[in-house]
Every structure is written in C-alpha cells, then in structure tokens.
Length: 198
Image 1 (cartoon, rainbow, N blue to C red):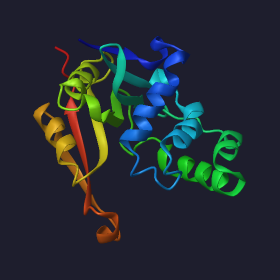
Image 2: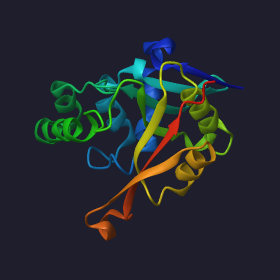
Image 3: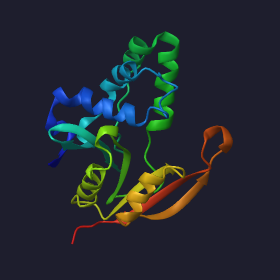
Image 4: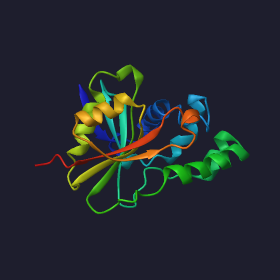
C-alpha cells in the first residue's frame, strides 16, 4: 500500500532515508559533489527542508519523493560548515556555492497560486509499481494552488516525461543545452498543469 506524507510529518528519523532517495535518484547530476552515495547523502542531509518534500511510502519505506515550493520558498537550506565537514575545505566550499547558485531561487513565473514541483525521483527497487504516479496525483490535488509546473526536465528522460504527460502536464518551454553532446541531452523541457481539484 502506498501512503503519501509530508517529510516533516514523518519526523527527523526519516531525514536520512529521504536524502538517500534524492541523492541516489540524481546521482548522475550530483556526481560533481561526490560519486560515493553515502558521502553525498551525508553532505546533503542537513539542507533538506523536509516540510517542502512529499514522500511516497511503499510498505512503510520511503520509495519516491518530490519537492513542492511556491513563491520564494526554497526546499534546501545549505550550510557551508556541513559541506566542508563532509567534502573537505576546498571541494566543500565549491559545492556549497554550486548548490546555492543551481538549486536555490524562485522560477521567473513565480506568483501566488503557482507551485513548482521539483526533485521527483523513485528508488530503483520501487519503479514500475505506481509509486511516482500516486505521489504526483497527490501533489496536483493539493489545495491552495491553481497551477503546477515542472521545470527543466532533460529531454532524454522519457520515463519522467511520459508520466507527466499521462497525468495531463503540457509542455510550455524548451531550453537548448550548451555543449549538448557532452551533457548527453539536447534540451530542457518545462511542463505545466492546472489544478486537479474540482
């Protein structure tokens, strides 16, 4: 049975598990910070604002996550000392600056009633079991929002794009990627959906 909870409702005891879902799901994107999954989770664990994450529990285990923010809300609060502690003085400092420049900041289209969904990922062992679908359906039915956006999905991420389109998301922007051959994909795709609440 799949149950959806907000991260802070699960309590601090689940923080590391939620972080591990995040860091394993985005391991390729986070490789700059560390290729060691445990070290990466240790470095990122402190910065998750768990009240901004929704977690799909499958048989009681965190199986999929997604962040939901609106306006100037953030889902991360990185601290320099933590990055330096886990990644070293120089690499930790650079990593902290990269996180601040790449992961923080509201979308240009931010407004009241608009929510951004980000960092959607599912543990490999739980893929194909409807976990991400249940999580996304829960999120787009949240009260207080009239529109939801997903920004900058890689155009090669066919499973994610297929799921979002199946749920009714439509594309509203594409952004070409510099050095596409090196990046391994050509464009970022952004999608939107109107609220599913009656």
